[in-house]
Image 1 (cartoon, rainbow, N blue to C red):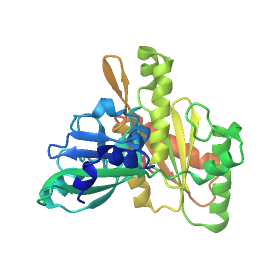
Image 2 (cartoon, rainbow, N blue to C red):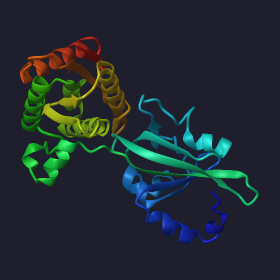
Image 3 (spheres, helix red, strand yellow):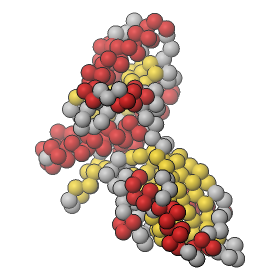
Length: 305
């Protein structure tokens, strides 16, 4: 990409980029942010004044891949593109200013000067969130009574309804079905030390991070207090473990900033696969027992059964 001619009319360039739905930012060779679009502000929560002149890895975005490996230090797409001049396309998770992880698809292209030397890079990114199909239908049908108003995921009533339906389908037609039962570690201590407002923020961040890491056919519901249940159809045993650990790591890479410190967030997960003749209570009870084992064995882990 050669943007030198456009840069001669910077207001035109800014107007064009600010009106894109995608987020866009430009960095120099040291990865310092030189431009931050309105779309980037909307998608990340960070204003241009908060990031201008900073290196993009300085507590901003902090991209991780699906294995929750931090890309900013050794596998930065911007650095790679500025080294070899090649365009790149990635699916990653950025850290929103509010603390939750958000899936985005990003594209990186080099910026050349008139002599062909790479002087920086431009990155565009867009929300890659997979909306949960069942909840999307709920919202379209305007049935807010079926969602948790705090976390904006399914409430327990609707989660139990979907679980009954999925278990019935499994018992009638076979296939695969799994439930993840998840609880935020140390949640009571967070409430006691920092107040219920902080606890509510941790719940919201956790729910959004979990929902962002799931497929459109999955359902995430708040079971009660700090506990969540995810209903996952059509996954092999190895895939269940992979998804559970991905969700666990995404929550671990999220956080909530309070005055003077940042609260880390982790979850303990139990993953149970449906067996022939299971009732919904059978399946959820096994997932709960496995989640308790994860908590008893050190927290922030997955137990499969």
